[in-house]
Image (cartoon, rainbow, N blue to C red; front, side, top):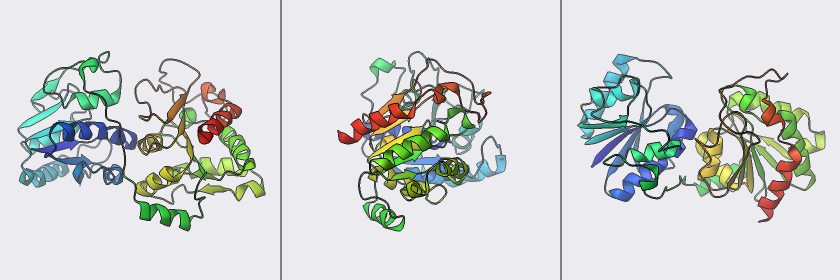
Length: 341
């Protein structure tokens, strides 16, 4: 069976979608799975051996671009897909499989997709509280509850050991014991642990001989520089800023090498979970009840309950009070225990 999966548009969601791919391979080891994905997610797919081909979806967030989608669909018709699983709930995400005339098109009901999907499921949010459960439920032939799903197979990204060694040498990274910081997050600072807390934690870690490695995109460089500016000149020698200097595959290999990770709710948090490095995931207004890090080595620190549709706050730097209230000493103490274990 040839299967086309229309992947999500966010890196973290794409990592979680590997659980669906693993389930499909578990049920049908000989199936061939291609994934239609935006360019910024395709490097993650390169580390999923279940993916036969990662196909570029050259359309930006929210753009219709009918002619572009039609061209992609025309190219896909030669692949003879028997079914397509559409993970996003948007109408636009269902267009290409419909245009490509894939016989069976599976997805959750949403955004008037009648006709575009011919195996449309009605989602019960209470039955599937986790996003990853909603993904793998689409591999079921009939309606299931979360308790009826087979055991969740957690994402596991492959590591390129040669590239990992090259990154260690290129950036003079500690061969063992480095602590990774992932201080970025989409949608503004409300999801971020304050830079001054990261700086305090960095000082404590450097004082006990740890190297601190910061990862993120070029958009995160300004936030990381705020952290670095609060460190002494001596401390800065053990603080490595790699924001905007690595691609996603290199970030995967570096996170695998580190002794532990401290991360906001972000795509890199899910990558860190998928390489099974011990991690502290810091949550504020967003809830880990829907998209937690899928790793037995990850722990969540969150001081509030529920989900808040809040992206900006009235604090001076825009941080959410629940993130401010997570004290660096608490994170440091737990990190020490995790690394020791």
